[in-house]
Length: 393
Image (cartoon, rainbow, N blue to C red; front, side):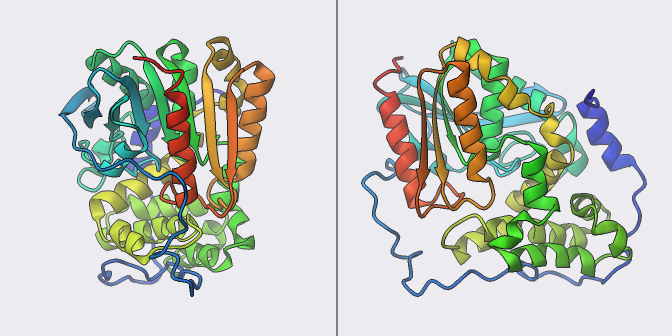
């Protein structure tokens, strides 16, 4: 099936006349807005304050030695920074969401003595401009997977890097890492993927349309639906297209409704993302518009359009990775309710069947989706350390 032109899709969604939401009138939201977020499960052991101790943790905090705004066209300027060893193995961190943005913590998965660490805020998010919280329409212009892949190439060229030694991507970042590796297989050597998402229809339906999360997180799913039902004048219609209903509210003229929709959408995902939910994380995301709005807008935008990928594209493309000798490490939480473990398994099996000689899949017990899970931190840092033996500057 032929994919629509990305720019036309983004602009047409904004300019089409949308039906007016006539349901419940929402007043000013509290900050953070937890009105439609399910409360965390009990944690009598206070595991949030006293997490399990794993052999490997993050590297110490490190400041960048280079920062910049890269003009990639289409009105977008992307924030990036570089830290670690200026002469080390080039490594790039691709954040999730889409729209979540990076933080200084992202640098800490890599040994700064060995790696030249690059982090990048993707179009519409983080410190990149325009941010969806400030200019919704501008942030969506040519905001699609092929454009994001091209942005990674533009940054590589801008920094004078011949090829990435390591591309690390989690959640949506794993999707983007695979898309990049398959589009430019000669420009990377190894991938580290966390919480794999292949953008299959089943994955989108499970998470956002068919209630697959209801089995383990019934209240979270009901709150996700309740926001739409209580703000709808046509629940019979909107109940069959929850993503479309969220999109209508996220892009409407009512600012309070836009904020409330973002809080309900992101709050739903965050409430199922960890084994032990930290209220402080909920407050940070839901109380910071420059994080909250891009996270919700970009994620719904990409979900509605199948990630701007052909159905099955990422599994079908593993042959080119095998042909170029890509090394792949995968860390996936056994209790990941956002990105199902089956995606990691399917990817690893496809890579092996295609002839990839170095594929390592680690399912982490007691871990959910977030890269702040101690078990996932341990697995990811061990992987970047293992790659040091085979990746040379």
